[in-house]
Length: 316
Image (cartoon, rainbow, N blue to C red):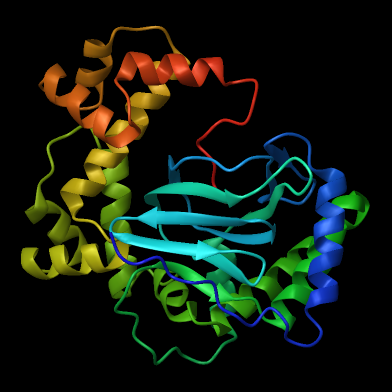
């Protein structure tokens, strides 16, 4: 695993503390339980009253803005730490493990999670200069909060208490937030992923194929053909984007889906293992235990016992 990346130390930029404090106070008033849906489309409030262990999930393209406390996210062999001086962005669907580091009942972890609308990003790109920066790294990361982003998020968060304004003002402010992201350190990756003809757009096409056909045997040549690359080039770029190999990616997707099925319906482990593509129950149980820290039966029993409280599968 890579070294833990320190949060950027620019929290005291002029004009940013007050907006972030106001967002935190607003979110604190509205947070109900671990996850609170808001009247603003794709905007969710996350809350945690205690530190957690590493909790696995699959992150959709999203932005997470921490308002109080801090979190660590591990994707592949990369670990990232972020707090209210920074924000996390994943511009591609990726398996991850997240851990709330700083939280207490008196000062809970608070965050806003915004699912990225790639169609809206593509529309914004029409009005922006062509991106000449080529992204060659991972399509996720932590970046410092800027005063401009904090100001836009404050106006966006205020809509939570003004639902009558969401339909008109929501898309306008969300567009501004996306525009600020495109101007930031991860803008190159987001731009290329929003363009289907780009290299990263082709990798995302392959990712979509893996997620749709996760229970089928993985054929690198077929995925490379979808991406318009040779097998060796595809394998290298896929790992640069997701921090894991295609096989590791598929395995993680299979295990997350198996966990979801075991939680959602009563059924024996063997049936679920076969349904997500495993040919050996022994191998499935071994890899499940390695991924989630317990056997399938024990893990699912533990999760069901905790359903009423703060449970994993958190994003943001």
